[in-house]
Image (cartoon, rainbow, N blue to C red):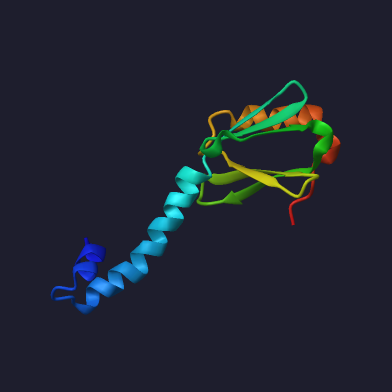
Length: 124
């Protein structure tokens, strides 16, 4: 709405510019992170498969292409913690999985512990 007011040029107030300058980049970032980077991750058959929604791209990595993986744990309260799994591949790409966002998080960590235990990195 503020962009339309600025485009029309009718009684443009200073806050219309402020809203456009602040909210437009924030909205673009949220759109990018939620829609353009949406991905489905599957692990099994000695491979990690990453399917991207946009562009219908698929990347399939064998377990020997994993350079390192680690699980970060951050205590967020008295009785709660945030856990994140990071997997780094030999082509320089990485995927990050938070335990709140992925329902199969525990199974993915167990799969990597079984199949790629010696590639587990140390949290620094």
